[in-house]
Image (cartoon, rainbow, N blue to C red; front, side):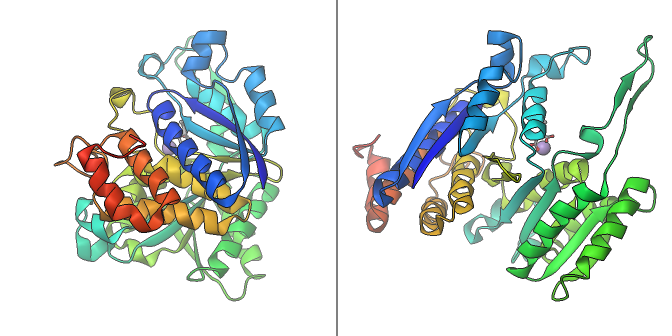
Length: 372
Ligand code: IPM
Ligand code: MN
């Protein structure tokens, strides 16, 4: 298959983790005889520094001309600490999602047996957790009208949803549940918010078309508690933009590190693949950032094009790296020397030689691998 992929490394650790994902994709292309062409462009704080715009026109044009987008991370502390900044890196990502109509953000939580004790939660609570979050990505409070009064003392953000926006992601969530444990939990705040009551009404109607699926409802505050109290009760979580943002960071704790969680942002025409983590500016350039979320986002990209064997090989490589404890310091306090690049090298090497991975591991430790 021929694919033209836009790579938007972005800010902070974005470039170093994205580099590992591209290495994995290049290895897949070589092994499976695909042609992947990568085209790079700026987004976020780095784009503001260069052009004054977090999403320069060239970047958007490139994304629109590619088959898929691989996104790194966005954000810079100099904007976080300046609430009056009119131009912000995050606007780049939000505009990209909105312009390309990437309405469904799909965030799977995979729990690796070997990492159960890395979670701050008890092993007996989290064992067997397998959740996928369907987060609406182009509506809700993120995109509703915003106001700030002239004197700067009053501000508002409108949370608005239309039936259509709810329907299209609800269908995706129900379909996903059909291939899983057949349960959808709608997370909302329908006891308070009118927009949440519309979600309940529309999702209930759509649920009737999926007779094999159990539909559950949960208020966001309770869901936040249930996520750490009894996460195995969840299968597919369907929710709006803001609740999905928050609950997915919380869910990542179960897996041991937010650095493991990948996502796919899908629309009718375009698709973007992005780790759920942020730009982690404190780690930039230090080679301590976990590249697995980015590498697994590359696997989701392959699945999007029905390249399942290819995606499985990446997932196997990741599972092996975890099994062999070839992980960055977020998961591996005793092995400070396992760098971002080293994890990427292992995954790349595994793709080329899956059966020699133990030997590769030895080589990586001895610094003898030809690819280091
Ligand atoms: C995410 C991020 C973004 C979001 C930020 C960077 C705008 O937190 O992808 O989860 O809030 O959607
Ligand atoms: Mn987030």
